[in-house]
Length: 256
Image 1 (cartoon, helix red, strand yellow):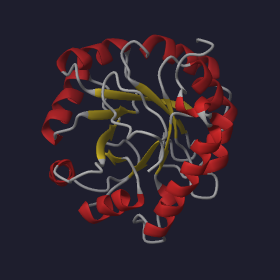
Image 2 (spheres, rainbow, N blue to C red):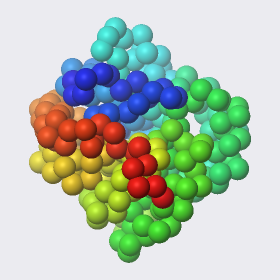
Image 3 (tube, one colour):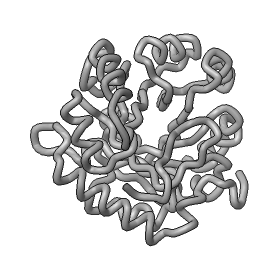
Image 4 (cartoon, helix red, strand yellow):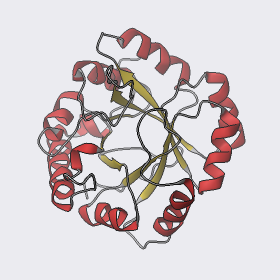
């Protein structure tokens, strides 16, 4: 495991050196993540573009199975484009989720509604880096939603498919680096990360965590144990070399 302490993804707890992998099909894959040293697993559901890896019934069963595992834990994170606060709360309750990553165009009002319904829910909001420089727009989002979100995650937009995430593509890391530097909340880096580029990405962006999806899969579309181990090892190297800057990413050192 990377980092001095295990990142808990709980309200008020610091995030440092987090390693998350999204797109888990079943318990076998979840156990492969855990064995490799991954901290959190992302479960993408109710998606507008990409196919889902499992049904919501299967996801609820998997969340329950993973929550029962002994230490070290593997933290389930729901990933969805739901934009309605009440619907998002119902979704979390149905699946037994305590952590949610929102990728849709969620307004501050709906995020506040979700926060009122589930005050202890750990909320991660996406910041999608597009082909043009949309940094000013993303900084506005950070300013507006930081009082309600616990963390942000940067990801890549694919104009060919319309997907915001799970694209297998990197984006302009200078944008993510600026967001990580100026956000008052921790910023997790996603978008085209794999064992070959994650160390460099960490050193350039100084994020609080990293997230991979297709970059740790084999040709069959399932998570590859060797690629998972390499990803965790290279991410660990990057976080160790980045030192305290990475450990305290998202502290709002310069402000938005």
